[in-house]
Length: 196
Image (tube, rainbow, N blue to C red; front, side, top):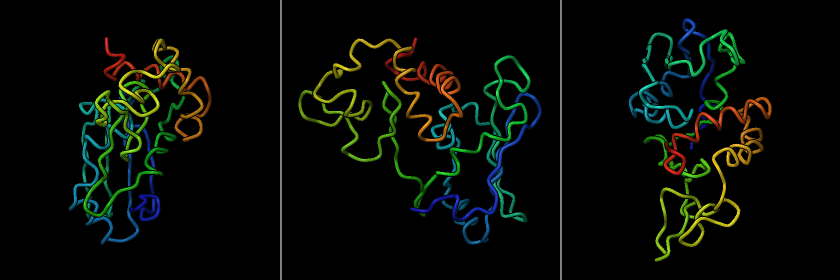
């Protein structure tokens, strides 16, 4: 696996006006840049999954060969300067890219638990249906034996949002508990269990 942080010279985010965010990935070596682009490592679907946003909110992914760079532009989840916005310059949104890993042939398949948002990349992560088959939509913690586990069976979406706070903080995806809670309140309704 290749870690993007190891092959990039610069990974940064910034505003592109009040309603859009732009991410710049600038590579150290031309060969790494060419591999990243040629193998289509970063697609709109991959970026949307990484940032837990709708694919339609990923506006463009543009390689720029002279700078060995890739520019990604998305719809800003919260307009710059609006009430509740915590990063007015958009300069602190590149965190998930720092831990992004990929194979030379492309990113590994990642499934998202449709209950708690856990990323499932290995067979052991998948839940188990009543017939013993793996469940590719629910993780082993939420769906261990053909039904929801007791810890989450009667949870509301708000309960799950609060449950996810320590995991988002540990992963470095949120700066504090309130930000982690707000992130979950935005992303959980997109999952099948909580979709309205």
